[in-house]
Image 1 (tube, helix red, strand yellow):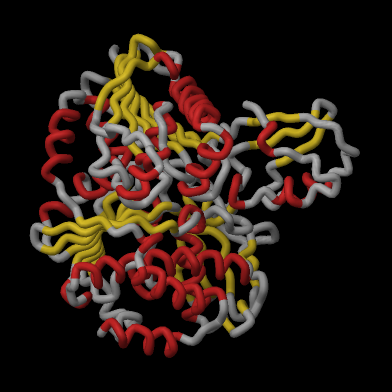
Image 2 (cartoon, one colour):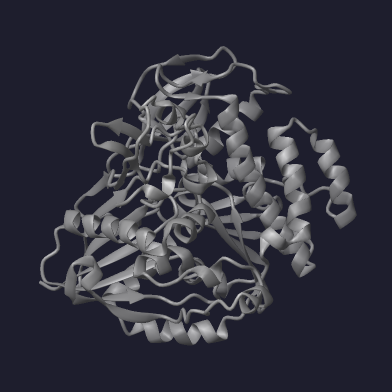
Length: 522
């Protein structure tokens, strides 16, 4: 039986499926709990690759994919297809990402940086250990609008609609607005809170994750994902008394949608004060807690997405009240309650229909794994699908809006001040959601079909280094993610847990100034 593999390389993890190449049947699914490249978001990954070597980043991500393929146990493998944003796919293939590091043609030309052709193509699978298999890599629409954004628009129904918006709710939240035949795109670096990471007890969507909270007479009933990625009842927590009742499925952590639901519940029960949570932290179980720091981390992610949505509408010069349909993609977009999402600011406030469409990136990879000729169609579509792209990092509107979002979530700024600021744009009521939207949950799971089994694997690679020092261990103690250890052979970093160039507290706190991150080798 000929088999194919589909791979979705996400910023917070990798999802893979083994397929029957002849019938299209999903045989089994394996996912990672981390992206193997150090960093909390795609910009961190790019910074790590440029500072410490694109080849090193390529080796890390290729090795993780190789291990996942081995875990899937293929036989007679003929094809591997991948999907993801331009940075992840370039690092996976081992091609330069330097042209992705700068906004604007003038900057790229002025620095003499080579532009990489990112049309869809096929390569041999030698670097994954499968030389007889071809690897299909889909196109980016533009150098900053990747195959994942293309998948989000294609596999959701967005392109067949008008006056609508689609967002893939993840670490790097891709979003698009459609007004007639015009499409406006952007990408907000929301951070890993939307995936349940950088939250004290956070985790990716997987078995054991709290994915929702539902109000009951006794308190808020947690909903916990089981091994089939369906929800079961978990502990009940009373936020006003901070007393939890252990019952049902025992959770292992909180995923992104559970984080959103917790923020919503805290707001509904008025458990937020100027100083943070009334009860800090909130306890779901003895080991699963949610703190003021977690609330603020989640708020920064929600704020980045809300600012991105409004930035696209202001750029398009469209009245936000005209945008009635919201397509919600990705794991968070599938499992989050759209009503809670609307109340917290994650979806457009005047939406009347919310469509939850699952993991569109993995679906596009499956299409290519089963039908490689589809690549020609995607390349043709790439030339026709012109978009108006806004680089939020250099956009004055986004910077202005996110300043107020940050002030509200992290610095206790009242919403009345934010509303006054929005008067300048003529959208002063944008923060006031309308009636709850009708919900069309098109798939029960973000991965539409898991096959015979789904297994989450921690495949975080390690890098090692050694130098002469007193072995005081301060660098190890200061690592916020506990990614660094010290043994007889020297220092070891678990790359998937390391925050990379955005942190480097290990190097900065070395009292002898001999710690050198650049010495680490895979």
